[in-house]
Image 1 (cartoon, rainbow, N blue to C red):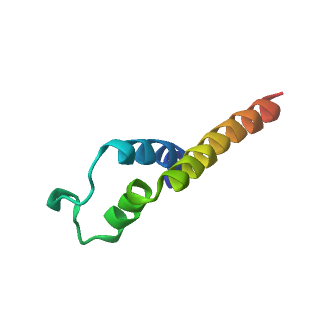
Image 2: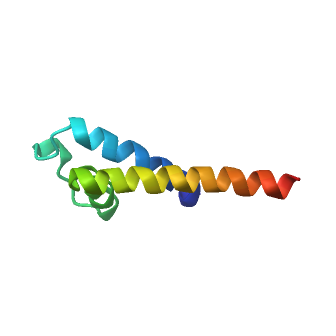
Length: 71
């Protein structure tokens, strides 16, 4: 399940991170899952672009793989 959601998170969370200030107290949490998701939002701009490109490549690669398996 997580492998189906992860490429979309690699795209969406960095985009949100461009517009949201994560230093406010509402974004501070103690569980590990939230820290991992916050990491994608607080990485530098070049890291966000790399994350978005990896997510897009993953989605396109899966689409091409599924297309060739169906033929």
